[in-house]
Image (cartoon, rainbow, N blue to C red; front, side, top):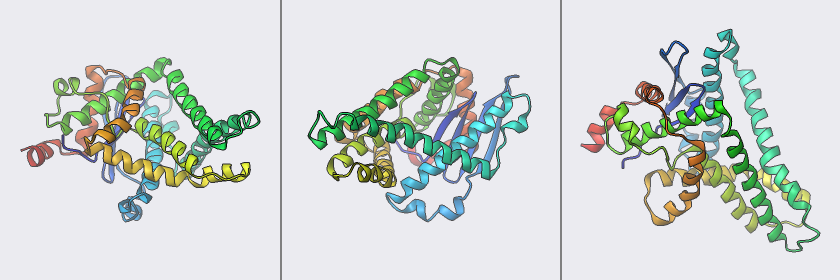
Length: 295
């Protein structure tokens, strides 16, 4: 396997693929036409040097992924609204959406598990045990959320496009020509998936909070907020390593994320694979990749 730098995301009836500083959103419209929009990543010139710094680059990549993901979702949704203009968002409104998304994630996946764990402090004297319980609550909430939305019909289709995204990347990284037949027989699981990244974030946070203990409940909560960039940075470096390594320990730590991807991905239909191929070809010369790296 030869790693590429391609990453992506499923959107409404489509797929976003990113390579270096360029990303493309391919959407299948209601008339079955595939439209592809190619753009340069916002702020890519300013952040290029920061993206090369280990650990710090994980924070920038996380914020960029969230921003691009929301832009791609907005663009894809515009084809299924009465007025396409409703799907367009300016930089200011996009910034507010990103900020609101981060705040909501903090409330659900940090504040809520921490608050629940405090209820058990009177019956569990050991602080490390309370911290471990907090981490378990966080994992249960995350897995429960992923499982619950997977039951929604619209989300099932998004998960099928998510599978198509992974299969396209796996196809070219395993040295095969990018066509429907080869993509169909490729795996829908990938170690660099955003789902795996989020699960690694959960696991790293448990380990880090167990190692760093403070007596004050308020300081413990503030510490969880302050360490978010640190956890994101460590998790990103692991995901990068996992994408190009077959080490036994790395594979073992990647296994839970791959298992969770069985919930967040579905086997796609051929027309969904065609959308994924269109998104890849808009940002990546897979033929050149096969020639240069695969011989």
